[in-house]
Each structure stands twice: as C-alpha cells, then as structure tokens.
Length: 155
Image 1 (cartoon, rainbow, N blue to C red):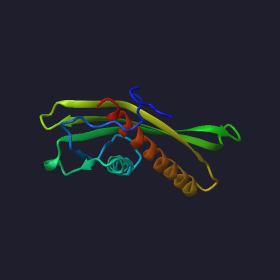
Image 2 (cartoon, rainbow, N blue to C red):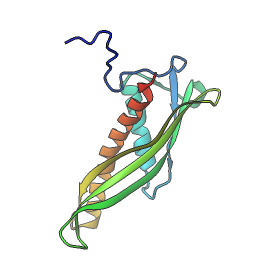
Image 3 (cartoon, one colour):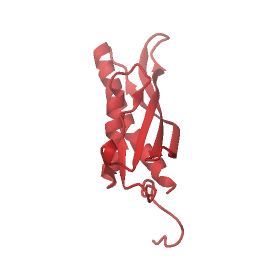
C-alpha cells in the first residue's frame, strides 16, 4: 500500500514549526482539587515529546515554551447499585495549553483538550481513591498524546 503525494500522515507524525528546535515545558497550573495531577500530566507531556525525538530543554535554552492549565478534573457516577451507591465512576480532565516563541508570540493554542476514564468503586474508600488515581494516570497519558498530536498536526 502506498500513500505517495496524498498528504496522508499518521497522527503525531507532524513537526514543530521550523524555528522550534527545543521546547521548554512548564509544570501545568492546577485549578483542580486533585493534588499532584499537574506533575503527572506535565511529565507525560514531556515523555510524549521525547518519545517522538523532540528536544525538551531548560527555559533558557529553548526556542519555544509550552505552558498550560488543568481546568477541571471531575468525577461522576456512571453506574449504580442503588440511588446512593455507585459501582463505577468516570473522571474527566480538561486542559488548555499554549506554545509561545522566544518573542512571546503565541505559536499554537490547544483549548479544552478533554478525555475521560472509568474506574471501579470499591467498598473501601482508600481503595476507590487508588482506582481513581490509576484512572488519572491512564488518562494523563492519553491527554499527553492528544496534546502532542494536536500541536504537531498543523506544522
């Protein structure tokens, strides 16, 4: 099978703008009540860049700066055994990011990048919190992939 000249590309196989060789990724601002989520998502975004062979650099060595905000991290019941007992919940995370050049001009904006992940509610509250944390970690990886794919789609 051949795709010569058709413009077809795999998601995330695009490039950063030609002027951007090194990107600095700031820890995302966390506007949620979910402690530590900013580190998890930021680290997964950095991993996505390095996995695709992009240079992640310190701020003083970078050509562009990626920063952003975790707008929400909410969970809600998706299945119940009674009106007050959840069997399964879903966590939804929304992030917004900007890539700025050295001159401060915005190169790219990704607003309201959203994903969700279900998790099991257990009888033990601590075990349920652990299940939610696992769901957030899975979700973080998918959000990082979405961010990278969206950022490199247009260049």
